[in-house]
Image (tube, rainbow, N blue to C red; front, side):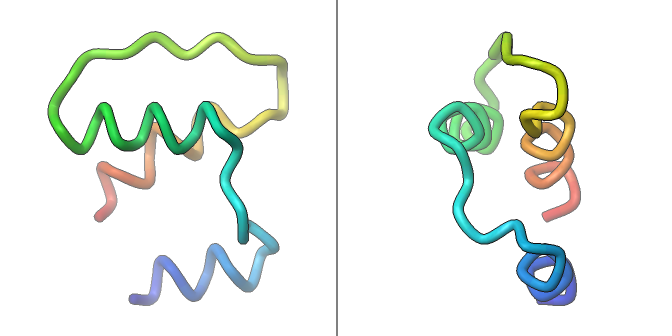
Length: 52
């Protein structure tokens, strides 16, 4: 719950499409490759499923 509150406080309210797709894939233990521009949130979508 603290992680969710922190993300909302920092303005991370609506994930990008690739963040949703990658997070769901990782939560289901599927491999995925994320290609997106710098600063788009690749690291965040990798870390959130790990921290949950």
